[in-house]
Image (cartoon, rainbow, N blue to C red; front, side, top):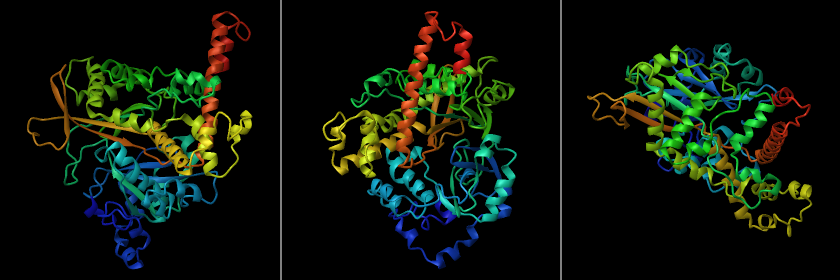
Amino acid sequence: MAGQFGLDNQFGCNTPDGNMMNFLSGTAQRCTKRMAEVLQEKDADEWAYRGEGAVNLVLAYCGSSPRFVGKVLRIQKVSNKVSKYENHHSALTKDERLLWGKFEGIVAARTREIAEQMYVQKVMCPLLGSEHVDAGIRILVSREFLKAVEHKVLLQRPAWRVDAAKVNPLCDSVLVIADHSIFPSVRGILKEDFCLSVEIKPKGGFLPTSDFIAEENAVKKRITRFKMHQALKLRDGVISQISKYDPLDLFSGSKDGVQNAFKSLFLTPQNNFRVFLNGSLIFGGMDGAADCVSYTVDQAFQDGIKRVIVAKDGMHSKYFLELVTETVIKSGLLNLLLEVQKLDAIDIEGAIHAYYDLVSLPCVICRQKGENKLSGRYSPIHLMSKHEKLKVVRDYLISATGKDLSMMISFRPRKSMDVESPHRSVLLKSINQTFDYKASFIDLDMKPLKKMEYYYELDQKIVSCYVQMVKDDEEIQNGVGIDGSLNSYIAKWK
């Protein structure tokens, strides 16, 4: 791919020394040579809407150029509430440059977009394995291309996404990464095989044990953050029913636990479980909303898995879930991910204190709790060296990436002639069928330092809501609800 785009050196990616300074010291002559690589207005016709998250719009290539076949674009969005398109376009703050100072490429980046790409390359690739992470490369785009894309996908985007954000017209480049939902050949030509892909949001897979968790929040040591957050989402009307999924099952290390996790995700997918056939969604929510009430195990899904899994009618879903279970276990992705998540060693209730010291602000939490910074409960953190505090906050933010990312597992039936397939394989013994598979991590966003305060506030809100829900539930079980009726309870939390 490097030779296809010719932009790797310009953006400091995949160069022999990986030195981001090569980009910063680039000349006008180099930029002139690359003008032919700029995506123009007419090129927008070859890119189709695939989906979007809070930060990026994702387009899949639908043209015939070998250099783009099997690729997707991640195009930065900007909030409709920001008039000058400042969010995510400026470079890192002074405190962020200090935080990521050991990673030269990140600190030297001239924009946050480039810093985020270097974060994936320099931080997440070593932790999660380069074979599972594609940092991508950046290519130049014209404003006319961005405007054409904005117009083309407008009617395909969920209304609430359109209201929230638009394509950032000030971007001068976009990120090109592999399309993990298909199997292109090495020559950039798509095979005609059917490919089934599963996108999974695992969420946090362990219970914290930090001594800095307040006694009134001790429930965090027994109940997963995911389950507690469900209560808050139910109360706020974000979801209409509690998910049956428990991340502890997925990360349990046992086949039964993992399989139970996928059965639960299949029953209540919300925005945590989606299935694609050759890149087209056939199960789960298109708009990324948490409440996936419109999903059904419809004919498109059944027809889709039948093209990949050979089984008797009525059994395809069962074997599909078995295939996902076997592959996730064999891939080892969960073990790698759990190690990254556990970088959060002292919980946000501890890390927030290191954050306030790093940004040279009075510790709001100590003040609220009436604690003395240097002699109270949190003094071990406040007395840490600057280097130690940097590590605490940096590790917490890396862990946050690990808790928010997605895994993409893709399958295709292995044919007997494909004995030299470059992909790993998994045998589903129950139907004696072998599949090629590839396993990847996606959505590895770098978290802004300023979100530490948001993370703390959300954490306290989640715990408070869950504790109140349990209390109300106990009152109802004892026949002393708000007005003595179950309807009032349902109305309160829905």
